[in-house]
Length: 128
Image (tube, rainbow, N blue to C red):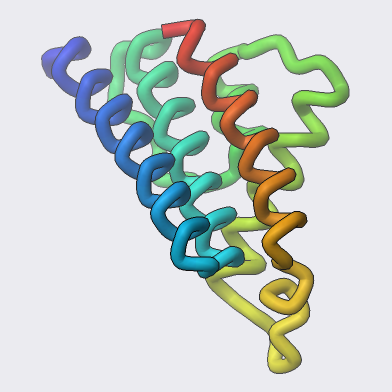
């Protein structure tokens, strides 16, 4: 396996997912902004996994499990952020019958959460 090539693949995918999140925000599709934000963070974690472990990243979506697998030290605030961002994946993908999460995703809510996602994204990218 070409570690650099696989890492570059995941980084490119992560950057694209974040760009899609921005496009979705412009289109006011706020729950999917957060879904793609989750994907961006997940894919950066997978790039880090490949670098640190020298093997393909596991097919999991739980950001805490990925971070722990590569032994990233997590302050409580960052751990809480990763837990919340992981929930966006599930809440966007599997809405309840009342669409509770989608109703919660106002412009302001999505904007604030996207900014936190971008902060986590920049933090993870600095480790590459």
